[in-house]
Image (cartoon, rainbow, N blue to C red; front, side):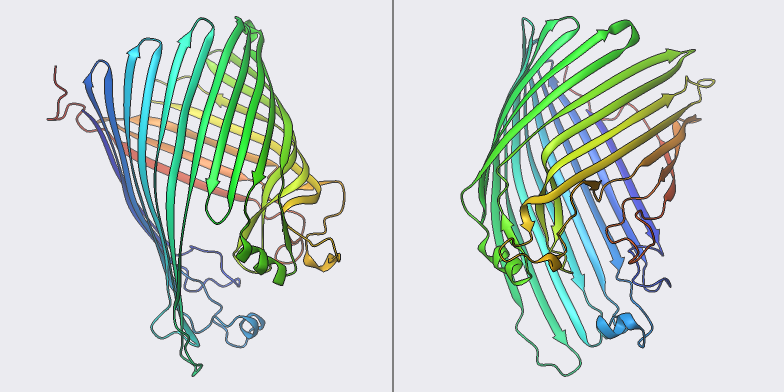
Length: 458
């Protein structure tokens, strides 16, 4: 039996984004554990178990000045709220080898997630309690078969989920209390897929696949997603490959979420189903090895119709999917990895430059009503390509992995991002992009005994 286990913890005085510049009531902490077990019953059967438990806690930051403009709209100076977020999952996999060319993998799983918002006992003017729990379980099974020039994979995937929500406001300013409210919802996803990689020549591979997905809850939807692609290693000695990928899909909505639609309508929005999307992706990889310094450069161009995004209703935290009319994502990436330095460590660097843009109108999901037109709803986007909210032009990771004495190791990494696009320029931050950000990470680890008292049978 092979066993791996780890523990982690963190604490910070700067957790969530604060409503004002001074940081007040903003501590955060978290702890968790992870374990992996692999047991080889015999040469044809392997069992794997992976489990994780974690809990995070966040104080909810406030504006301590009772006379501020913000507190005149959303008073927070008298609150001492916090939120706990537990999370845990366990997965089991059975890997069975029929023969060197046929492999079956069956993987059931279970996941629990919670978010418990608890107001302070002395909160004024209201003590809020919000509990949200989600339980879902499912399975994936896949059969991989290699024959002639084909690498075939077929399988099924599905899960069912139940979510429970509880909400209660206890007023402390004399306002009459209202009974708590709660609601539960269930849903599930089932998918069947098949794909094949056919090696036409040693340097040309044809890829074809099909995935049929069914979602059933208060919204019921079916989607068919075919994939066609060509991969070419036109110059193997230079390590150059090209991938042309064509994605076509269609979705048919059978039912709608009437409650969400009514809420959106009251807020000045309406919902529209986006039925089809298509696009293509072209990528070029170049891999070089010079004096044992490995480098890889990739160029990417991804153009599609009906780009999936999201938007919130008014100032709420209720998000609904939307689709843009078209999108264009262009960029290039560079990775460098040094040779081993005196058998004690290795440098690494990864840099990406990417531009992600989309063009109006918003064709599906949460949109502005067109009859009568409501330009004040905030979704009237001028024509032409404009950055989407995940557009960050420059991203850099650089670090060093070191092998230390006594079977231990250390890993460092510096991450830099030039800043994501600013959804509302000039409202919180000036300019079209948020400020750049840099983080430093340090990880230490030690390997104990490779042999444990648990042994696989001969």
